[in-house]
View 1: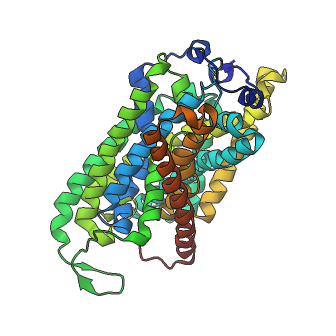
View 2: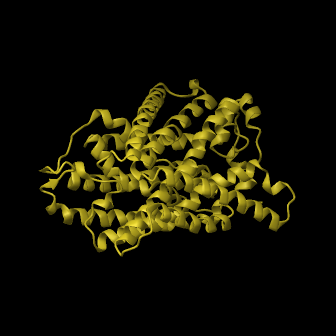
Length: 441
């Protein structure tokens, strides 16, 4: 059996009814092999992806006050992800398997259904977004040398290429090495974008707007109406807890998780601040998503595009493997007594069909910025901020939480829920405008 599949099968509904107990579930958890540094790199790679390059546009939507929202999202992400992993061990005897199991332990089947919906929307939505970005990047690069292949054709080509490693990589362990490249590539692109944007800043004293008028680059202190959709974009950038239970499971020292998630989130937040402030300061209200679309044509833009394209392509198996493992576990693929070849064939069929589904969605809605906001608002806001706190309160009990911490929890729930609801409505409207071709940026 694989590492992920070695989790003890836990009847989470019966565990939920028994309530918390004393003990050491950490001692009963499957032994991992990853060092703290490897886990840290995995966390950074999961978080510091394509979302980083959309953050300057989030400041464009919110104004400079968006940095306050970013700091708030950072703090909420650290706290909620610490609580989520603690929920895996809440009964003191066994480690729950993953996020939906925590929901089932807290609220039974309805909890599992709700979280599974949001959980899978991220596991599939991430690859959708990355296919869109990959197709857009390759199309831009190929068009500059005279290619006539369309954006949608490039999306299909990228999907066809990536289905191969998705089939060949059976578990998360086989795709973990991609984390190192992902973490480094994002940092490199942020650095390139920052330097190029600063060099390019002298060209933006006066700009031409879509209505053909000219004027200076503008910046806003705050645009209150757009704060929810900005929070949605930040939520997407901090969304990773569909994978975090597997990252934590792979660790030798699972008790170090709180420190790992703290330093991992703080690291990517530094990247977020550097990228968003530089991009918005230079390009102001004409900044695009992703930010490197603002860079002038030439080596810097080409290099940035190639690096981030490789990164998002290699990140697709991380998300798809998470989704496919759920499907294969639900079908009890390994316990049906199939031969090795037959099991591999069924696995290949499942994973090919899942990639076809992802590619189909990307083909119908190839709008990176709008899809990122929708995904962040609809799913990441609830999964990243709200649900871990709610489940923690249900599993451990309100009486075991101090008054100050309880107030903080209430604020997280209120802010996260309101932001998700309003942000989803706004994101759907923006996506509809993009679909009709009514957006200027």
